[in-house]
Length: 209
Image 1 (cartoon, rainbow, N blue to C red):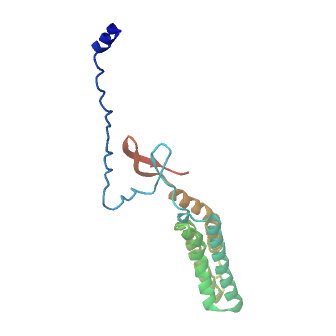
Image 2 (spheres, rainbow, N blue to C red):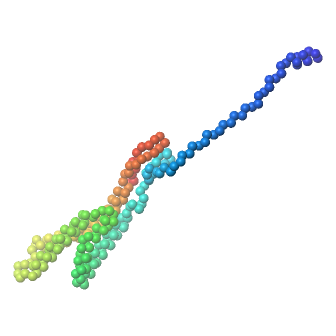
Image 3 (cartoon, rainbow, N blue to C red):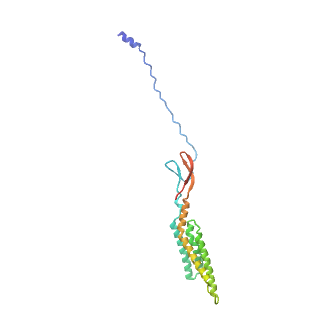
């Protein structure tokens, strides 16, 4: 019994344990920048890879092929109707207005599509000039006595001018939709602009066909 008490007394007392340390960390405040929101560099849209791509042009920049054809046909019919009504009524004003309109207005479909329509307009202008010359020569021949019949050359010039006049009208009507297609292709042509991605910046080349 005495030996047990001595051994118990001989054992050193356990060292006091220190209380657990609590470490606290404070999150750094997020920096905020003041000022206006940056504006985009251009008409772009973000892709899944983080790259910015140029957007397709708005549809309002394009024109209708059917619209170009309808305008060319409508203007041509109105011009010829005015001239024919003037001839029927022997109205000089209507004849002049209608005749000049048949030279100019068939190109209206091209003008709608942003084209000059110079080919058809030039053909009609040359044809009209030849027709006027033929009519004037025929009038001169009618007031003279004998030997003033129109020559074969005059008849050939008159017929050629009439054919050129009509061909120019058909050309402008038939090619109005093609002019609209050319305009729409020009709207969708290749565009070069800035491109931003995760690794840096570069140049983007985009086109729609």
